[in-house]
Length: 312
Image (cartoon, rainbow, N blue to C red; front, side, top):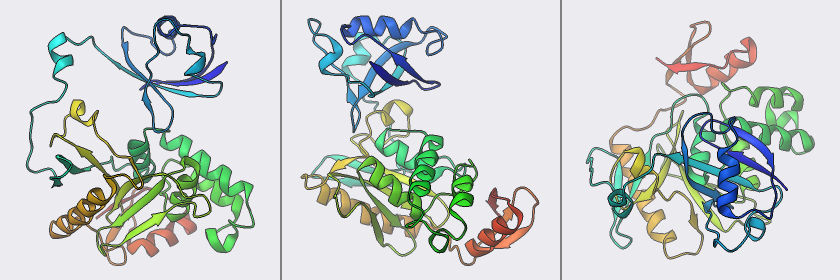
């Protein structure tokens, strides 16, 4: 069978025997020098959606657990001591991290900052769902748009279907409401987009086939971050590994998570964690023109073909 394997640095399609045991699968993966050129060891294999650690009894083959076309997410790391395996949660605490404590869940709802690289919306979704890269998501959006020119016409897109598909696949193009709707449908997840300035929560989902899970993104006016729950208030990468950013709708966690999200939004408002896109000044990083507002940036992008902007 054919599977897609993703490591932190490589994506590759492999053909494997479905009669392998889990240990034989590990040996075969480690033997692939393209996937593992160094001495990195596989710490976890995750599959499914949302991705969950693979656990196969030694006496069984992978056939029941991995299927043709599945994607395996590989996490690598050094061998851990027995002590570190028994105590995986760090005691590091940072009170400066934007958060709200959820007493009934004994967890913190934490604002996880996403890199400001013009792909923050895609990367925020990827962080929450643990799925694809920004490049892959851009390709998904282009495919959706290209396949339905009646729905995604020039009036909706602001340019021709072909031009928009070419534009959204560029790494410097910002995603927005169109892409949120597409990716919500593609990953079968409700995307709650929390606008900090207004406090409104805009929900993106396929209403004809309501998804069973949801994620929470935070929008500042020019940037997307993601909300995650964790029993430890920390920014260390080790503690981020136990983040929960995707929840089931109708679960006992949904109401306290959404209440905490609203409270965190109010906290961020007090910290001026927002940018008014009608008045803020930005600079084109390609020709250095200074522009006013999102409208000015969009007009400049259409006229000049420049898509890299930074706030003045």
